[in-house]
Amino acid sequence: MVEEIRFELADNVLTAEDFIRLKVAAGFIERPFQQAQKALENGLFNVSAICDGKVVGMGRLVGDGAMYWYLQEIIVLPQYQGKGIGKRIVERLMEHIRSAADPGTVIYVGLTAVEGKEPFYGKFGFSVRPTGMGQYMEIK
Ligand SMILES: CC(C)(COP(=O)(O)OP(=O)(O)OC[C@H]1O[C@@H](n2cnc3c(N)ncnc32)[C@H](O)[C@@H]1OP(=O)(O)O)[C@@H](O)C(=O)NCCC(=O)NCCS
Image (tube, rainbow, N blue to C red):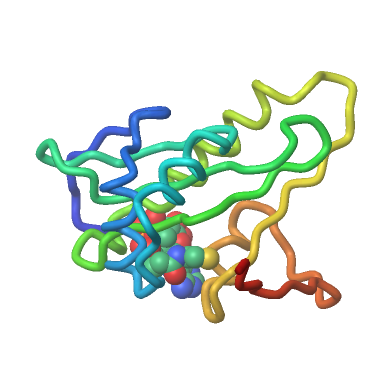
C-alpha cells in the first residue's frame, strides 16, 4: 500500500537552485546556475511538488509548444519516491499539454527515459521507440 503523504503541486515556480539540487539528488551532473536558469526560462512549463514547504519533486516540459512537447527531468527525491508524487507530476504535465496545445492539431509528446523507468512512463501511454537517437555535445 502506498504510504499517504501530503504534498501540493505548484506551476512555474521552480528556482534554478531547486532544479540543480533535485538533479544532483537524482544522480545527474551538477549544472551551472546560469545554464539551469536559462533552461527554466526557455522551457514551456514546469511543476514542483512541495512537501512541508520544500520542493521534493519536479517535472518540466520543453519543446515548441505546437508540434513537439517533451517531458524532461521528472524527479522525485529518493526518500519521497513510491508515494504517488511522480504520478501526479506527470499527470499535471499531461493536463497542461492538453490545455495548451491547439485543438484540432496532432502533436507528439516524447521523453527519454532512464533505463528501468520505461514501465513508469508506460502507465501514461508512452511506448518505447527503438529508433530514438541522441548525443551529448560539449560546446567550446
Ligand atoms: C521515476 C520517478 C519520477 C517516479 O516517481 P515516484 O514518485 O516514485 O512514482 P509514483 O510513486 O508516483 O509511482 C506511480 C506509479 O508508477 C509505478 N512506478 C514507479 N517507478 C516505477 C518503475 N521504475 N518501474 C515500474 N513502475 C514504476 C508505481 O508503482 C506507481 O504505480 P501505481 O500507480 O500502479 O501504484 C522517481 O522514481 C525518480 O525520481 N527517480 C529518479 C530520477 C529519475 O530517474 N527520473 C526519471 C528520468 S527519465
